[in-house]
View (cartoon, rainbow, N blue to C red):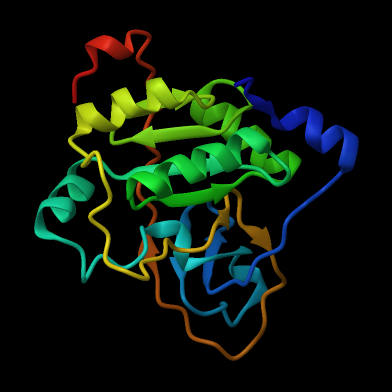
Length: 205
């Protein structure tokens, strides 16, 4: 199946995606970046960007089998998708049918596309990461090879009614700060450098 190119989608439709926001990314004047669950009290504290908590982790794993929890902890799966992307829908369905819990990041703006370029090297979608491995485009055979190598069960072990967290935007949506709120801050972890395996048959983790 041919990969979906996000840049063409954005150029033709100008579509962007809106989501409910709960966590705030604060870019301070000195260049430091922090996160808070509340908006800063003073606009001069820096540029404030909102993002969703669902982007930070896979849906709750409290009721998952122990074996599956261990695999998720070692090799978490993140799926990068876009609206109106048929290969993305096929990739999402493939993971869901196999019972693979995953975090979904939606790429729906030019800013998202630029960030995807930095992560994966181009704008091909869907894009999937499994631990440190990176897979561009959707191929059932290739995705199965990677999931097998990571140790994910061939058939679903998910409990009835399990749902992954809703997709969240790759680049948080900017919002204006408001007054009279205290900030709870945590340092931003450095981004993980993207890697690529050109030989799926020799996958190692």
